[in-house]
Length: 209
Image (tube, rainbow, N blue to C red):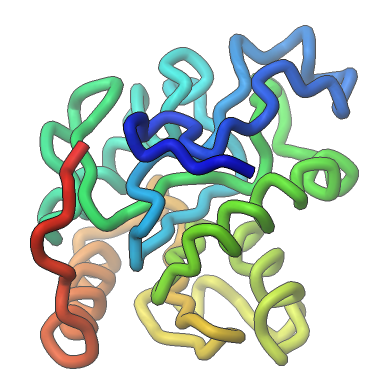
């Protein structure tokens, strides 16, 4: 798989006409692959493209829930112009478990399985230090694949704004943005900032996009 960091949109050149999920082919506007810095140490994982991402082709853009995530990342210094359909990002990669949106329901288990290869390839190619799973579905998927904990033992409500050790990286779970109170957002921001201050030094001289 070739890496093209001249573009932040689908930099790994993944299939943009995938038809593994027939039920989604007629409901999606486009396939939404990952977006960001291929050498990022932070990866943000949602469960599926939101209505905005389905329109823009960029995860977490174009709607209120995604904007809440991007605004948090902007406050941490990873995103500039979070209001844009193609924000400037540095040292972060945005992606999701599934790549197509159904407007009336969440992804099925089969649809998540059909997209596993896309996510596995992104994680392996990027090799992030920290993954932020947004919501229970994303946390459970990562727990099954990348931690020693059974997914049933991890509740995103309890794990919000904490650190869970994974295989080769750390997970910092977050509840879905539509469930963020001021206190939850502040807790997540402070926890991530403490990781930046204590355990992690941002790589200087990265090429922003």
